[in-house]
Image (cartoon, rainbow over all chains, first blue to last red; front, side, top):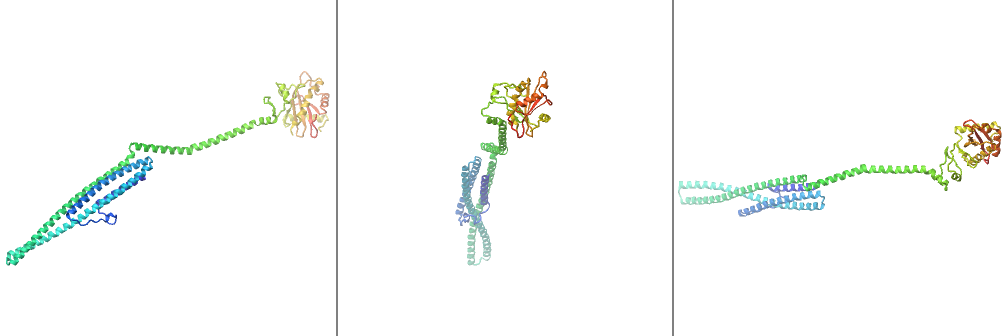
Length: 370
Length: 102
């Protein structure tokens, strides 16, 4: 975008230079070349110089137009290069655009010199015209004087001296008339040259107007070019879409995916820890049993847990020899059978009553407790 | 204090009970053996009997039977109760300051 703006500014600078050249003479002191002052020229030299200046203007206009076209092409190339993110192409086009600008400046200076030459010629023509007018006035005065002298000579016709004077006056008058005629011819030629110069100036202005129109059209084309369905526009649209997708993906990753992933990871870790703790607590009694009974049989029937205490079921050998154990509430106590003793907390209601009754009986029978 | 330390004595008493009663012509069905220790440190073993209805329960509560049991158990106090869930013997197998060697 900045490069397109720079190219537009350079084009505008060129147009401004051309406008300055075509409308007004360059004021002295602006440029080094603007101090150019044409010397006084003869009529033949003036025609030649004017023709050379005209040729310079025409060549300069054509070269400026070519430069403008090249600048337009370079600007378009810069846009395309910018779209393709080709920095090298952009640098090359910038250098080329700068060279074209410099060349345009040089051509504009040449055209300014040519315009100064034409201005000098126009001033000389004006001076010639003024001189012609002065000569005509003098000729008229001389004619009047000669007529008066002729009348005096005719009326008096006196002396030869007077006649000779009259003849002399007539000769002077004829000479003055010839001089006036020659100056009048010069003035006519100068006027014709001035008219030709005005015509050429008008043509130049028309050409410049056409150039400005072409430049405006080129700018419009340049502005509308990326909007058309060209491969470059398609590429630019693709790049824009890719950029938008990347931005959306980055936003999605930043605000959704990453936090959700972190939260899920934390939840999984917490669940694993909780599962490990629960499993350890469940397996802790088995581990404890294994530590206390390193040679115990895990396939043995489960021990009875009564009031928070594991009931001792007796030696393992006896249990192995007796595969089907009797339930606790129905013991068939044999002589060779290991009794199954329940350890019950004394705070049980039934045990409390049992103990109270036994102690009462014991006191009643006189066998007091020790 | 846990009553586990009286567990061996309780087993010994429980194992001796059927033989002692059998000497008296009694063949009880021992349904439960309950060991407990009171807050005062008295360890009681309750031998719960499931007496057949064909055999009178007075034979089990006779003083001679209790004396035989106490004598066979090295003088441990033995009482009988029949309230709160049937007939049972209560043997005081441990008290504070007394060894539990039965």
